[in-house]
Image 1 (cartoon, helix red, strand yellow):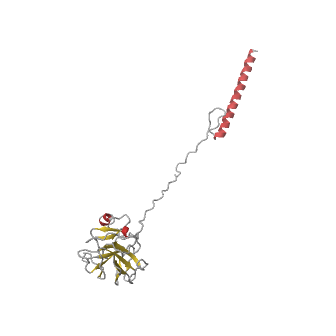
Image 2 (cartoon, one colour):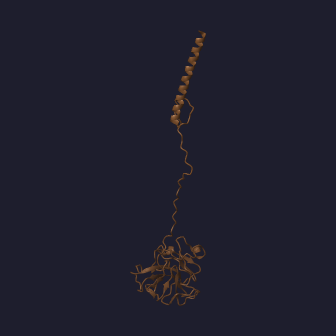
Image 3 (cartoon, helix red, strand yellow):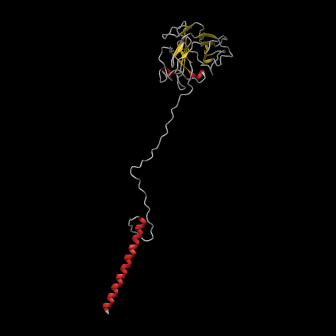
Length: 271
């Protein structure tokens, strides 16, 4: 009888072990199906962890494209021949010159043009016609002088048609050879004009440059709006031409204590 009880107990223990083994196999099999053959030990009822994809090695990282900063362009630069420098008296009252500058990239033939002048207190316009083959080079200069001019730079055109007043006057660059009138001196034939000093008959662009240059001084057109006497005579703008044209003589010129005439043989200057 005792042996029978022992045998029955053994059978019961064996059957219990089979149940545990079956349940354990079932649990791990389910976990394998969910996790893709990865065995996880955990407490019943917990959700399986979510894996974060690892970037594939060698996948290119998008590059950040920078936007280039636009380059500023100087404003109010003339696209036509301009009056660039005026000296009204040097060693004598008629030792004077008018300089022109061509800011464009093409030569300009002035043969059919004229340079004209009216004194600050006068009613008369004086005209000197340009001559055949008077050509101003691209980014270059042309020098007009009175017969009394005695500067070291030779003139390209000489005349004795008028004498620049030491008090004030207006110089006109005209694209034909017709003498100006009050009605026409601000018209389409006037390519450029510069008034300096004082006088009731001044005909400026905007306002006149109020200072009449003293002996051997001159007024010179700026290279840029930021130019001043120092930058034009010995600074960064010395060789940048004379193209600034805001249509206001008072703002467009500086006073040089020593004039610097340039002619068609002078080194060209690009703005």
